[in-house]
Image (cartoon, rainbow, N blue to C red; front, side):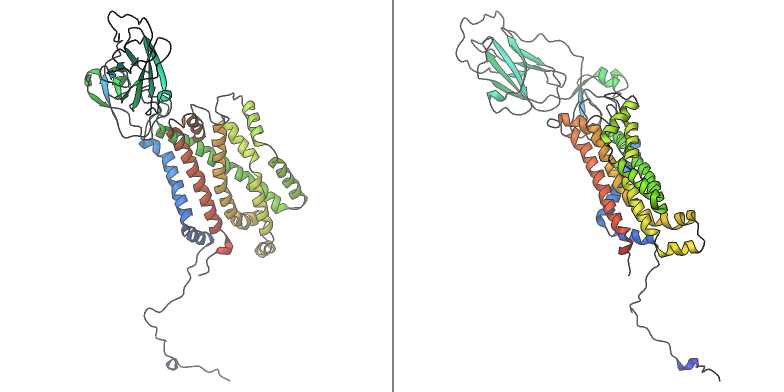
Length: 467
């Protein structure tokens, strides 16, 4: 009996129309498929780009902005962000005798009221080196009080900082107190020698930024004193994000502080996540009584107070008040923060070891080390990666908190937390000293958290693409 053999002429090829839909599915690995899903998450991709920019800012920034973060510019203390500035070159300070009344005679009797001082003016050009104030005498006044405010006074009780007083024949005052290139509202109030009359004259002055030839030479703005003459302008150091209360460049300190904050925020989580992986992996794979004992010890570690151990480690390392405790902080984080990772990895391993493919590999002769390296660890990498992305912002925030309360990184070593601690003291008058480090902490923590959320969705095998 022979089988029927059809001839090829009995069949004709099927004609396909142009543009007909062809259904295909590219072969993607687990990680390729996760990357495809991650790219569809706009928030996660934006966060990933922010993290990359932070890494560039931290590692490459100092090569492009090579300003010493410890260099103090006392002529630009607490300066807000601004464009490049020029300063007027002035001579060294010369003492001033002031203006007095010739043949002064004190009033025989003190009036109940007097007129406000007139012709309130400046003597010479007002600069950040010195502001000299002069006014005409007020009849029956035996002295004057001088005030300075950084905003327009709203009345006699709002004249601002009392600078000093003059008596008798003195009709001038010299102000050299922490002058900046900004608007100042000066007021002069006549007195009877003791009590003030509730009348005043006001003058608005904006001192010009000034520098001496010697200071310009010392700061490297000129090569020789003869390079610039008195009365000329010279370009001074540019501080795009302003300066702090000691005149140090904020941008340079933020870059230096990023190295400290991100070092602790990345190295510490990496170390204690590795400890948690090993600990939880052994507990979950071996199981039984061994698992119970290990996890009860992990519960005990969770109950230990982190702040107390941070203090004990600082004492053990001989670190006193006002000294940086980077190493005790790192050790405390590694020793006390691993149980959360261990629990997650243990639960994942307990689930994976009961899967059918693990049993099949064991029946085919797979040894424990093969099963762990080939199946268990790769299948827990998603959980590990997500745990790490959430651990990094937690460590950064912990460092910032400890530095803020004075137990972490201490000045002059910059970190974002210690800079916030310094900036909070002047946040009302100079908010940029607090705003920039706090902004970087917030952006970094938010970026890592949003990236962790995106990875959680992308690495979920139940959401793997089926099209």
